[in-house]
Length: 362
Image (tube, rainbow, N blue to C red; front, side, top):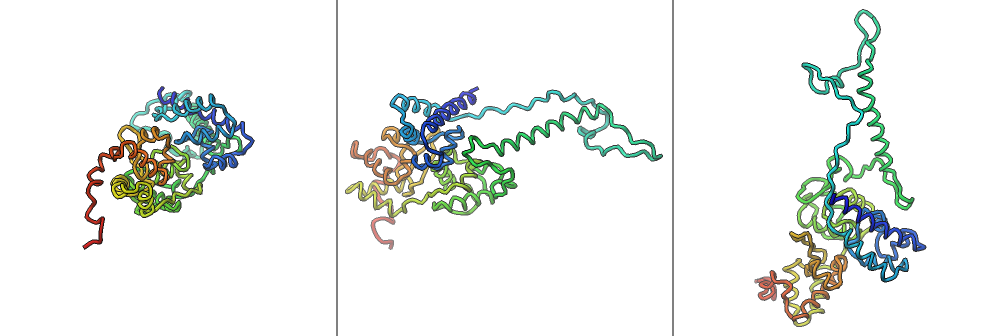
Protein backbone atom coordinates (compact mmCIF):
# COMPACT_ATOMS: atom_id res chain seq x y z
CA UNK A 1 0.00 0.00 0.00
CA UNK A 2 2.86 2.38 0.79
CA UNK A 3 4.33 1.77 -2.65
CA UNK A 4 0.93 2.47 -4.26
CA UNK A 5 0.68 5.82 -2.45
CA UNK A 6 4.18 6.78 -3.52
CA UNK A 7 3.43 5.92 -7.14
CA UNK A 8 0.22 7.95 -6.96
CA UNK A 9 2.17 10.98 -5.72
CA UNK A 10 4.69 10.67 -8.53
CA UNK A 11 1.84 10.32 -11.03
CA UNK A 12 0.07 13.41 -9.65
CA UNK A 13 3.28 15.43 -9.85
CA UNK A 14 3.95 14.23 -13.40
CA UNK A 15 0.43 15.23 -14.46
CA UNK A 16 1.03 18.71 -13.05
CA UNK A 17 4.27 19.01 -15.02
CA UNK A 18 2.59 17.79 -18.20
CA UNK A 19 -0.16 20.37 -17.72
CA UNK A 20 2.50 23.08 -17.45
CA UNK A 21 4.22 21.81 -20.57
CA UNK A 22 0.93 21.90 -22.50
CA UNK A 23 0.45 25.55 -21.48
CA UNK A 24 3.62 26.51 -23.33
CA UNK A 25 3.80 26.80 -27.13
CA UNK A 26 6.96 24.69 -27.22
CA UNK A 27 7.76 21.14 -28.25
CA UNK A 28 9.63 18.86 -25.84
CA UNK A 29 12.91 19.60 -27.60
CA UNK A 30 12.50 23.39 -27.60
CA UNK A 31 11.23 23.51 -24.03
CA UNK A 32 14.03 21.24 -22.78
CA UNK A 33 16.58 23.58 -24.32
CA UNK A 34 14.99 26.54 -22.52
CA UNK A 35 15.07 24.59 -19.24
CA UNK A 36 18.72 23.58 -19.76
CA UNK A 37 17.95 19.84 -19.53
CA UNK A 38 17.81 17.04 -22.07
CA UNK A 39 14.67 16.33 -24.08
CA UNK A 40 14.40 12.79 -22.75
CA UNK A 41 14.79 14.02 -19.16
CA UNK A 42 11.86 16.40 -19.63
CA UNK A 43 9.80 13.57 -21.10
CA UNK A 44 10.65 11.31 -18.14
CA UNK A 45 9.53 14.01 -15.70
CA UNK A 46 6.23 14.59 -17.53
CA UNK A 47 5.51 10.85 -17.82
CA UNK A 48 6.32 10.00 -14.18
CA UNK A 49 9.36 7.87 -14.96
CA UNK A 50 11.61 10.17 -12.91
CA UNK A 51 11.39 13.08 -10.47
CA UNK A 52 13.71 16.09 -10.81
CA UNK A 53 16.38 16.17 -8.11
CA UNK A 54 16.42 19.96 -8.44
CA UNK A 55 13.24 22.02 -7.89
CA UNK A 56 14.78 24.82 -9.95
CA UNK A 57 13.91 22.76 -13.03
CA UNK A 58 10.26 22.86 -11.97
CA UNK A 59 10.49 26.56 -11.18
CA UNK A 60 11.87 27.30 -14.65
CA UNK A 61 9.12 25.22 -16.26
CA UNK A 62 6.50 27.12 -14.23
CA UNK A 63 7.99 30.40 -15.45
CA UNK A 64 7.78 29.23 -19.06
CA UNK A 65 4.11 28.35 -18.51
CA UNK A 66 3.30 31.66 -16.80
CA UNK A 67 2.37 30.02 -13.47
CA UNK A 68 1.60 32.31 -10.54
CA UNK A 69 3.05 32.15 -7.02
CA UNK A 70 0.25 29.94 -5.65
CA UNK A 71 0.79 27.44 -8.45
CA UNK A 72 4.54 27.35 -7.76
CA UNK A 73 3.84 26.74 -4.06
CA UNK A 74 1.56 23.83 -4.93
CA UNK A 75 4.14 22.46 -7.35
CA UNK A 76 6.74 22.54 -4.58
CA UNK A 77 4.40 20.58 -2.30
CA UNK A 78 3.84 17.95 -4.99
CA UNK A 79 7.57 17.78 -5.72
CA UNK A 80 8.43 17.19 -2.05
CA UNK A 81 5.87 14.36 -1.82
CA UNK A 82 6.99 12.80 -5.10
CA UNK A 83 10.66 13.00 -4.06
CA UNK A 84 10.19 10.86 -0.96
CA UNK A 85 11.97 7.48 -1.25
CA UNK A 86 9.75 4.88 -2.86
CA UNK A 87 9.48 1.28 -1.71
CA UNK A 88 8.61 -1.03 -4.59
CA UNK A 89 5.27 -2.79 -4.17
CA UNK A 90 5.42 -6.60 -4.12
CA UNK A 91 4.51 -8.07 -7.48
CA UNK A 92 1.45 -10.31 -7.11
CA UNK A 93 1.64 -13.85 -8.40
CA UNK A 94 -0.26 -14.25 -11.69
CA UNK A 95 -3.69 -15.79 -11.20
CA UNK A 96 -4.25 -19.23 -12.68
CA UNK A 97 -7.92 -18.66 -13.46
CA UNK A 98 -9.33 -21.02 -16.02
CA UNK A 99 -6.54 -23.60 -15.83
CA UNK A 100 -7.89 -27.03 -14.80
CA UNK A 101 -6.20 -28.81 -11.92
CA UNK A 102 -4.01 -31.55 -13.44
CA UNK A 103 -4.88 -35.14 -12.59
CA UNK A 104 -2.08 -36.90 -10.68
CA UNK A 105 -0.30 -39.61 -12.65
CA UNK A 106 1.46 -42.45 -10.87
CA UNK A 107 5.18 -43.17 -11.38
CA UNK A 108 5.67 -40.14 -13.64
CA UNK A 109 7.63 -36.95 -12.93
CA UNK A 110 5.84 -33.60 -12.86
CA UNK A 111 5.48 -32.23 -16.40
CA UNK A 112 5.99 -35.65 -18.04
CA UNK A 113 2.75 -35.33 -19.99
CA UNK A 114 3.89 -32.11 -21.64
CA UNK A 115 7.28 -33.60 -22.57
CA UNK A 116 5.96 -36.74 -24.28
CA UNK A 117 6.21 -36.79 -28.12
CA UNK A 118 3.04 -36.57 -30.17
CA UNK A 119 1.20 -39.84 -30.76
CA UNK A 120 2.57 -41.92 -33.65
CA UNK A 121 0.70 -44.38 -35.90
CA UNK A 122 0.24 -47.83 -34.42
CA UNK A 123 2.47 -50.64 -35.68
CA UNK A 124 -0.30 -52.41 -37.64
CA UNK A 125 -1.00 -49.30 -39.73
CA UNK A 126 -4.14 -48.36 -37.84
CA UNK A 127 -5.41 -44.83 -37.25
CA UNK A 128 -3.39 -42.33 -35.25
CA UNK A 129 -4.25 -42.13 -31.60
CA UNK A 130 -6.86 -39.36 -31.35
CA UNK A 131 -6.14 -36.37 -29.09
CA UNK A 132 -8.49 -36.36 -26.14
CA UNK A 133 -10.64 -33.36 -25.29
CA UNK A 134 -8.97 -33.20 -21.87
CA UNK A 135 -5.51 -32.84 -23.45
CA UNK A 136 -6.72 -30.00 -25.67
CA UNK A 137 -8.35 -28.30 -22.70
CA UNK A 138 -5.10 -28.46 -20.74
CA UNK A 139 -3.04 -26.90 -23.54
CA UNK A 140 -5.54 -24.27 -24.76
CA UNK A 141 -5.34 -21.81 -21.80
CA UNK A 142 -1.53 -21.90 -21.89
CA UNK A 143 -1.48 -21.18 -25.62
CA UNK A 144 -3.83 -18.22 -25.17
CA UNK A 145 -1.75 -16.93 -22.25
CA UNK A 146 1.44 -17.16 -24.29
CA UNK A 147 -0.12 -15.24 -27.20
CA UNK A 148 -1.47 -12.54 -24.88
CA UNK A 149 1.89 -12.19 -23.13
CA UNK A 150 3.70 -11.82 -26.46
CA UNK A 151 1.20 -9.20 -27.63
CA UNK A 152 1.52 -7.26 -24.36
CA UNK A 153 5.31 -7.30 -24.59
CA UNK A 154 5.26 -6.04 -28.16
CA UNK A 155 2.82 -3.27 -27.22
CA UNK A 156 4.92 -2.21 -24.24
CA UNK A 157 8.11 -2.08 -26.29
CA UNK A 158 6.60 -0.06 -29.12
CA UNK A 159 4.38 2.25 -27.05
CA UNK A 160 4.92 5.87 -27.94
CA UNK A 161 3.18 8.26 -25.57
CA UNK A 162 1.92 11.28 -27.46
CA UNK A 163 4.34 10.63 -30.31
CA UNK A 164 7.06 12.73 -28.68
CA UNK A 165 9.34 9.99 -27.38
CA UNK A 166 11.02 7.61 -29.84
CA UNK A 167 9.67 4.08 -29.50
CA UNK A 168 11.92 1.35 -28.14
CA UNK A 169 13.07 -1.33 -30.55
CA UNK A 170 11.97 -4.85 -29.75
CA UNK A 171 15.50 -6.23 -30.13
CA UNK A 172 18.26 -4.07 -28.67
CA UNK A 173 21.60 -5.66 -29.47
CA UNK A 174 23.74 -3.15 -27.61
CA UNK A 175 26.01 -4.90 -25.08
CA UNK A 176 24.19 -3.80 -21.91
CA UNK A 177 20.91 -5.26 -23.22
CA UNK A 178 22.25 -8.68 -24.18
CA UNK A 179 23.28 -11.87 -22.39
CA UNK A 180 24.43 -11.54 -18.81
CA UNK A 181 24.15 -7.73 -18.99
CA UNK A 182 20.35 -7.74 -19.29
CA UNK A 183 20.09 -7.47 -15.50
CA UNK A 184 20.82 -4.15 -13.72
CA UNK A 185 24.53 -3.47 -13.20
CA UNK A 186 25.33 -2.45 -9.64
CA UNK A 187 27.89 -1.86 -6.91
CA UNK A 188 30.09 -4.88 -6.14
CA UNK A 189 29.76 -6.42 -9.59
CA UNK A 190 32.88 -7.37 -11.56
CA UNK A 191 32.49 -8.39 -15.21
CA UNK A 192 32.34 -7.20 -18.80
CA UNK A 193 29.03 -5.42 -18.12
CA UNK A 194 30.76 -3.10 -15.64
CA UNK A 195 33.53 -2.49 -18.14
CA UNK A 196 30.96 -1.44 -20.75
CA UNK A 197 29.40 0.99 -18.25
CA UNK A 198 32.82 2.45 -17.49
CA UNK A 199 33.62 2.85 -21.19
CA UNK A 200 30.34 4.67 -21.79
CA UNK A 201 30.93 6.94 -18.81
CA UNK A 202 34.45 7.74 -20.02
CA UNK A 203 32.95 9.09 -23.25
CA UNK A 204 31.26 11.85 -21.22
CA UNK A 205 34.68 13.28 -20.40
CA UNK A 206 34.73 12.15 -16.78
CA UNK A 207 37.85 10.62 -15.24
CA UNK A 208 37.20 6.94 -14.46
CA UNK A 209 39.24 3.75 -14.32
CA UNK A 210 38.20 1.06 -16.80
CA UNK A 211 38.86 -2.18 -14.94
CA UNK A 212 35.50 -3.98 -14.96
CA UNK A 213 35.09 -3.54 -11.19
CA UNK A 214 32.03 -1.66 -9.90
CA UNK A 215 33.58 0.04 -6.88
CA UNK A 216 33.14 3.42 -5.15
CA UNK A 217 34.52 5.46 -8.06
CA UNK A 218 32.19 3.87 -10.61
CA UNK A 219 29.26 4.29 -8.21
CA UNK A 220 29.99 8.00 -7.86
CA UNK A 221 30.27 8.44 -11.62
CA UNK A 222 27.00 6.61 -12.25
CA UNK A 223 25.23 8.80 -9.68
CA UNK A 224 26.69 11.97 -11.21
CA UNK A 225 25.50 10.83 -14.65
CA UNK A 226 22.01 10.01 -13.36
CA UNK A 227 21.78 13.44 -11.75
CA UNK A 228 22.89 15.17 -14.95
CA UNK A 229 20.34 13.44 -17.20
CA UNK A 230 17.43 13.68 -14.75
CA UNK A 231 17.13 10.07 -13.63
CA UNK A 232 16.55 8.87 -10.09
CA UNK A 233 19.95 8.95 -8.39
CA UNK A 234 20.46 5.46 -6.94
CA UNK A 235 23.74 4.30 -8.52
CA UNK A 236 22.06 1.29 -10.18
CA UNK A 237 22.48 0.96 -13.94
CA UNK A 238 18.94 -0.11 -14.81
CA UNK A 239 17.35 -0.03 -18.27
CA UNK A 240 16.67 3.73 -18.16
CA UNK A 241 20.27 4.45 -17.18
CA UNK A 242 21.56 2.06 -19.86
CA UNK A 243 19.53 3.81 -22.56
CA UNK A 244 20.72 7.21 -21.35
CA UNK A 245 24.35 6.05 -21.40
CA UNK A 246 23.96 5.03 -25.03
CA UNK A 247 21.62 7.76 -26.26
CA UNK A 248 22.25 10.95 -24.28
CA UNK A 249 24.84 13.48 -25.43
CA UNK A 250 26.02 14.45 -21.94
CA UNK A 251 29.27 16.00 -20.76
CA UNK A 252 30.58 15.29 -17.27
CA UNK A 253 33.86 17.05 -17.95
CA UNK A 254 34.77 19.21 -14.98
CA UNK A 255 37.67 21.05 -13.33
CA UNK A 256 41.03 19.47 -12.67
CA UNK A 257 42.37 19.27 -9.12
CA UNK A 258 44.68 22.19 -9.86
CA UNK A 259 41.78 24.32 -11.08
CA UNK A 260 39.84 23.47 -7.92
CA UNK A 261 42.77 24.35 -5.65
CA UNK A 262 43.41 27.62 -7.52
CA UNK A 263 39.76 28.67 -7.18
CA UNK A 264 39.76 27.86 -3.45
CA UNK A 265 42.79 30.15 -3.06
CA UNK A 266 40.93 32.93 -4.88
CA UNK A 267 37.79 32.60 -2.72
CA UNK A 268 39.25 31.87 0.74
CA UNK A 269 42.20 34.26 0.68
CA UNK A 270 44.45 33.86 3.71
CA UNK A 271 42.50 30.79 4.86
CA UNK A 272 43.01 29.10 1.51
CA UNK A 273 45.70 26.61 2.56
CA UNK A 274 43.46 25.25 5.30
CA UNK A 275 40.46 25.23 2.97
CA UNK A 276 42.37 23.28 0.32
CA UNK A 277 43.35 20.65 2.89
CA UNK A 278 39.73 20.43 4.04
CA UNK A 279 38.56 19.93 0.46
CA UNK A 280 41.27 17.36 -0.25
CA UNK A 281 40.25 15.46 2.88
CA UNK A 282 36.57 15.62 1.92
CA UNK A 283 36.66 14.81 -1.79
CA UNK A 284 40.24 14.58 -3.07
CA UNK A 285 39.39 17.86 -4.87
CA UNK A 286 36.95 15.96 -7.12
CA UNK A 287 33.96 18.15 -8.15
CA UNK A 288 31.85 15.05 -8.91
CA UNK A 289 32.48 13.35 -5.57
CA UNK A 290 29.28 11.96 -4.02
CA UNK A 291 28.98 9.99 -0.77
CA UNK A 292 25.86 8.42 0.75
CA UNK A 293 24.76 8.70 4.38
CA UNK A 294 23.05 5.98 6.38
CA UNK A 295 19.80 7.99 6.50
CA UNK A 296 19.46 8.06 2.71
CA UNK A 297 20.85 11.56 2.19
CA UNK A 298 24.05 12.39 0.32
CA UNK A 299 27.00 14.77 0.46
CA UNK A 300 27.92 16.56 -2.74
CA UNK A 301 30.94 17.94 -4.53
CA UNK A 302 34.28 19.48 -3.57
CA UNK A 303 33.38 20.32 0.04
CA UNK A 304 30.86 17.47 0.44
CA UNK A 305 27.95 19.75 1.29
CA UNK A 306 25.08 17.75 2.80
CA UNK A 307 21.47 17.78 1.63
CA UNK A 308 20.50 19.60 4.83
CA UNK A 309 23.11 22.31 4.28
CA UNK A 310 22.05 22.62 0.64
CA UNK A 311 18.55 23.50 1.79
CA UNK A 312 19.97 26.13 4.15
CA UNK A 313 21.96 27.58 1.25
CA UNK A 314 18.99 27.41 -1.14
CA UNK A 315 21.06 25.08 -3.27
CA UNK A 316 20.48 21.78 -5.04
CA UNK A 317 22.56 18.69 -5.82
CA UNK A 318 23.02 19.93 -9.38
CA UNK A 319 24.37 23.26 -8.14
CA UNK A 320 26.62 21.47 -5.65
CA UNK A 321 28.27 19.56 -8.50
CA UNK A 322 29.38 22.88 -10.01
CA UNK A 323 32.83 23.39 -8.41
CA UNK A 324 32.62 27.18 -8.45
CA UNK A 325 29.22 27.21 -6.71
CA UNK A 326 30.38 24.56 -4.22
CA UNK A 327 33.51 26.51 -3.26
CA UNK A 328 31.61 29.77 -2.83
CA UNK A 329 28.93 27.98 -0.79
CA UNK A 330 31.62 26.49 1.46
CA UNK A 331 33.04 29.97 1.99
CA UNK A 332 29.58 31.18 3.04
CA UNK A 333 29.44 28.39 5.62
CA UNK A 334 32.93 29.28 6.86
CA UNK A 335 32.05 32.99 7.06
CA UNK A 336 29.15 32.39 9.46
CA UNK A 337 31.58 31.85 12.38
CA UNK A 338 34.88 32.15 10.51
CA UNK A 339 35.77 28.54 11.22
CA UNK A 340 35.58 25.14 9.58
CA UNK A 341 33.20 23.56 12.09
CA UNK A 342 31.01 22.26 9.26
CA UNK A 343 33.78 19.76 8.45
CA UNK A 344 34.74 18.35 11.88
CA UNK A 345 36.06 15.03 10.58
CA UNK A 346 38.75 16.80 8.55
CA UNK A 347 39.85 19.16 11.33
CA UNK A 348 43.09 17.28 11.95
CA UNK A 349 43.99 17.35 8.27
CA UNK A 350 43.29 21.07 8.18
CA UNK A 351 45.55 21.85 11.14
CA UNK A 352 48.66 20.00 9.96
CA UNK A 353 49.60 19.65 6.29
CA UNK A 354 50.59 16.16 5.13
CA UNK A 355 54.33 15.51 4.61
CA UNK A 356 54.15 15.92 0.82
CA UNK A 357 52.70 19.43 1.00
CA UNK A 358 54.53 22.71 1.41
CA UNK A 359 57.77 21.78 -0.35
CA UNK A 360 59.66 19.43 -2.62
CA UNK A 361 59.95 15.80 -1.63
CA UNK A 362 63.38 14.87 -0.23
